[in-house]
Image (cartoon, rainbow, N blue to C red):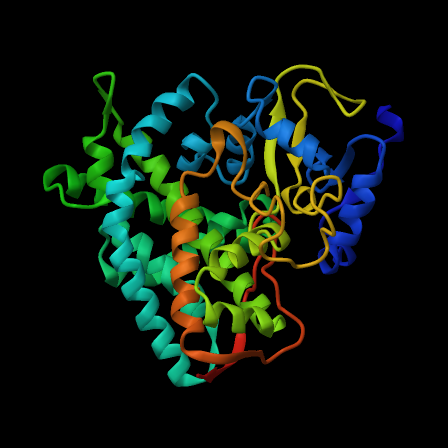
Length: 399
């Protein structure tokens, strides 16, 4: 069947402009597809994407380590992070890191998330015409992650540059991009190593201290394991949540009836967020590597091949979601999307991301009667893995 597989270029401007038309074609193929620029097999249907995500024996997460360390970059601590580990190593790391994301950690954060959301929403609405990425959607998760890790607020201004550089690793093509990413990895390593050393000397009430204290079967995390986790958490905890909040605001602007409903009843907001997660997923794909010769939907995949689960396509699979191209908060199976993953790698930060998005929207909708996009065309982020607005100029009409 190999010869008959159709190849799609995910970076073709036409695909980037309208991915869902192409995803629908990919879902109608008899088996899997091939995609450029990764040269990977791609699972566009929900059933196949879920099969890849839930089967670490046949589809290894070590693909993430390979993509995180292209030849031009060299060693990158994120390649050793939890997200790139398979069983049995994954279970120990997950158990240790889970402690920091448990109910105590989340309870400690809740009041802070609400406070930051209220302050930022108040300031944005006062300005009325505002670019919301820098004023709200990125600053909120940035400040929350900074607080969570107990970092010095004077260093927060570096985080945007760091997270954008880390998110570009898989699609960086120019010498300038390569140089910037190499510089960022070096800079982050020096900064986060110093943070770990400081907490070892003087523990506090923050996640880095929690990670240093955590113990399973008499073993603690090593400094290298903590560093790799922080390399993952810092960008991932900011970028994906920022894009979720940004995408949600776009749909509040496009569907004013949902803004009105959210103003009337806060219980509508979690349903609205789940539909944004499905319909305009901030994560578009997951990398895996086939550990053996394997067959999926009639397609033979040789051992060692890259395999992609196309989350953005799976979340609109007509076999699972009725009228998948309609934006319908509260829909049946609304929370069965694959945005936070599936199986052992289900996103550790899912609860935090949902909390941040909910409190961000609660703070904003209570203060506005309408949200108007100042440009009809959304300027999406470059690259393919993370999906959300690069800038979000709006007019916020006060309530």
